[in-house]
Image (cartoon, rainbow, N blue to C red; front, side, top):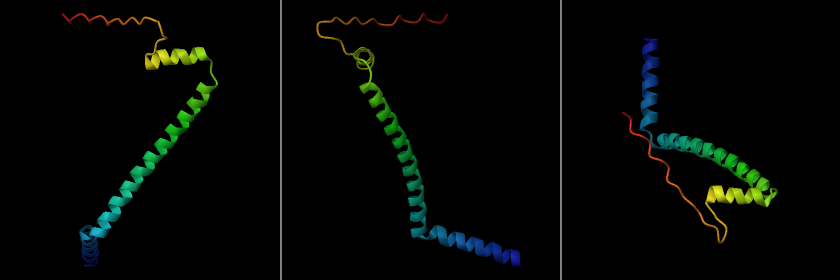
Length: 94
């Protein structure tokens, strides 16, 4: 008998909480806050990485910066010719 009463109280409480709009909103907001905190920590890490890269780039030689500009940004000097080659087509499987 006592077990049945506990079970009914539990079911009644669950139904009340799940049918209560404010409780659902509270749970939804809690989940959203957790997601935003995770995103915030990822963005903080990215910001720290970019600041460190900026400092490293400011303290490097011009040759290194030129190599990065050529590789990452596909830049060329004025008057230079750029040659682009298409990669060979892979042979068809037999």
